[in-house]
Image 1 (cartoon, rainbow, N blue to C red):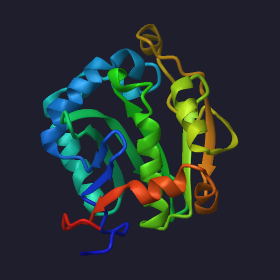
Image 2 (image 1 turned 120 degrees about the vertical axis):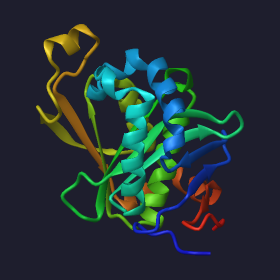
Image 3 (image 1 turned 60 degrees about the vertical axis):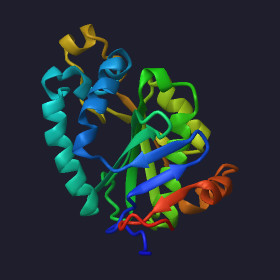
Image 4 (image 1 turned 180 degrees about the horizontal axis):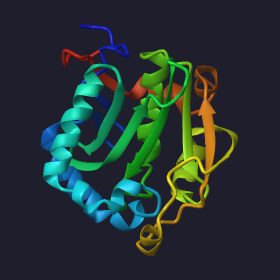
Length: 224
């Protein structure tokens, strides 16, 4: 058994409630990821610029992207997880802990779930599990989360998890083009920045049950 650290992240995070598994990105996930994206394009195009880039949403393009993401994962540079329903072996979406903060001991969480999995608590449970790993195993001191004020689905997940609002940032994200707006882009160019510290997370009612419930496999694939 080996320690889980930022430089040696887990091979699996499993929440038996659901059940739900968070798995590092693998190139063999590319077809399932493209399927989930295509199902959810209408919702994704509202706030995700990459959803408008058709040439990037192909199996071949995702193969190349995932190969790079997996290398970054094992180098401890970026932590992307694909969400799976292990009973059906179905990819439900993604959650990531991204090194976008100025503090080296902080990350930014991002998330989305496919349209058919929305409204079932999948995204909330995934973010909660990721935060437990971020604070208890990676020992980060801050997890921030930013979302467009028009993105009601992201706001609901953010509130359920218990992030603290820090402020609204003007022109923080990419500006949508006229073509993007005609194709469903809904950004209001106002990003709500929120954050959570380890102490704030541990005070949340969901934290202790999630910590007790989730199962991890270390970088060798052995159960912790």
